[in-house]
Length: 421
Image (cartoon, rainbow, N blue to C red; front, top):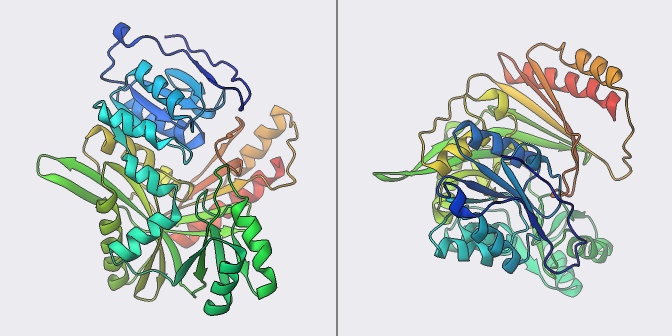
């Protein structure tokens, strides 16, 4: 099948829609997977579905998105336009609709589910993932999960009152948006207004409320990838080995697997993950974000799809987070076997980054030096990913007999790759 990617009209033009999807009557419409979101991670997921024999339709709000380059068919539409998105879904008539973006008109997902299409994550999960207030209330108020002390504020005055009550330091986040975007750490009352403005202006979704959290000393920040499947006996959960992660200077995310935890902490982490994932329902990969202090574990957030902190699984596990997601959605067997300790580092473009054209032979020379590190791998992201607020430049991966050596190796790979940026 030929693939075409058309240039979208400007964002403010009604009916911004282009697609090469053909009428459902001309194909087996009960086999296709439609991905709503076509960034770098969706590219990996597209390949995972295709290896399992599925045709993939990749949709995003802009043309030539990373997943468009490998998908069987592509479509361009405003992702937050419920009417336009519904029309695209109805025309393609896939069996599975998979939300891979944080900015999707949930009403279109609801309409698709009502028509009998299988939607993952569930429309409720997508709505909750777009709303930190709703997610935190579900976790703390309805499920009784342990969290750090938190408050919500709807104005500068309310945030000031929270700060005076809670004390400092205090983390302030927007209630919607990508993790890390628009966050501030308050150290004094004079910082409140600036933190408020930073939070409410972040992202592409308008909001006028913020989340404030007490800063607690923790030993580890982890992602516990939890895979929810369903079968003849009902839902089942599968846990990957804990993934530790650390953000560095806003342009780097380091992750490693496994992160060693005490037996009580690991049991608590699995219990928290099971309760929040079962409450959200559906099938697929959930990245449950947790804070660990000794044997105490606190719920922080949950990602309802593969995320950057799980990229280490591309080398550390038999099945990556993308393969697990695809298998679970399709109702196939999964396993979470870790085959080697591993580490990963994602490098992001900073605010002042400007693309510099580098001769192919120089890129090859740098890659040669990077890949000379034992048990290493590297990926360069050359296609723009407009679905993410921070552009990924590259990914370094490494395995080793132990996590310490893997982390050392991946830092060496990243150090060499930085010559490209």
